[in-house]
Length: 326
Length: 262
Image (cartoon, rainbow over all chains, first blue to last red; front, side):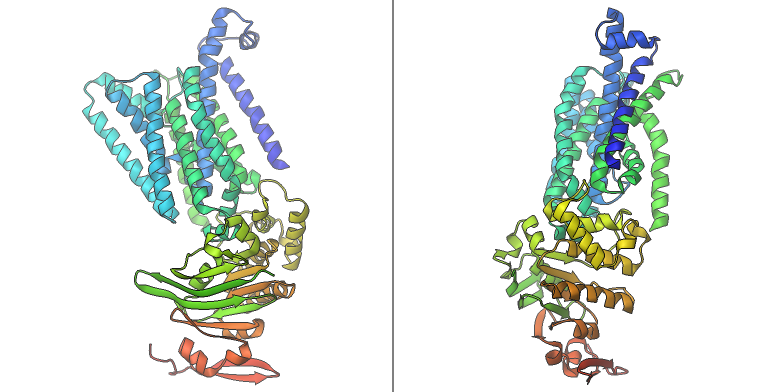
């Protein structure tokens, strides 16, 4: 099976990328010391650098990439549109809004910010879940997402507008830029159950997403429970995206690029795209984060900014190619 | 034998009646054509039969179950559905489209095996798709895509088949191709209800023709009983002559100036 080979290749790439991320940093650590630290046998300083700083950061980048890659692939399957991504349903924006609200009112600790992001994502998800049950139209669902996204953006602009001083303005901006710097194992542990729940939803919906490639009417005839599939994907995208935003803030376009790259290798089957797209999403963000650390800029480049700089032109290119074909 | 029964089925939307007290039974080895002008309620009738629309009154029964209440997978094993053909959202391969016909039997994500593989192979063979099996669907002609979807519907090996205008936008050869495939499928011991816009095709391939107009079934019988100039004028508002050539019906439209004012 080519799928199995693809998945194994991506897992190897992911492990390689995470190890590489541990090797690279402001304090040069040779290979031997990194592996010693990874097994816990190294010098105490090395162990701290690896276990407290580099590994959590690399794992955070990987986790966020997995969540966004999987959400993108699932949403694209459901909406039958290669341009769909977590941002389309407004879930990212609402999650980021939740986080900024907490920051604005000064109640910010790692935990409250993460919980607020998750709450924002789940609120958006719940709203979409209600809409998904009531409407049979995917276009309506997208439009609701666009509305949610715009509203969250407006409230965030309002908060920036009202920010009492430059420091809180910088705090708010940091969140919207998206970064995995200084993430701890605790941040990951908090997000993990939500991410797991989201991925489980996608796994259950995978076969139905394949059938949906033939259109909703045909899928209905094939025995797909359309309503249940919509609910699973919307809930899964809410949970996974909420988890991603709680770790790293808003990072866009991974959810579009990763599925787009793997699709030709799995016969364009939306169900079979899910797993490799998640893994590739993870690999992309780990590599992207290494890039962010290597590029010498006066203040560190944010991962979300880099993702947008590379991802947005690709988005336009995919949209243009799609227009040409149909 | 699983039969499909529509009993006094009515559907209304926003004060308009889409379907009024329709009665229809589909039994073994029968190919029933449903004909009528646009807006006559043909698709609504089919969606009720499929359980996709819950009737406001009356009941559609598949085997022993209420169509609108059936679990999706159970329904899909009894009835396969060929909606008006649209291109797939992604350029997936012919063989993968046909394999989706086995969805209700749990296929997907992995290569099909056993009964599923046999059913898929048989459908590919029956529809002459062997040479096209690995082609992406976006490289197919209209006729090839129609045959692919027929194979997909046949692969389910369900006793009942519902097809909504399977011949739409096909050239004459494509139309005859598709209806021949459905005819063979029915002759192998199944039954089918097919919406058609071409009375001559219906008369050629169907055992029975159901005539619809204004949301009602106004006639139901063999082509020889029901295809008459009067009925064609009543239902479609065009003048036609119907003659019998070697026991077959020949229909010619004699329209110029003859369309009934609507």
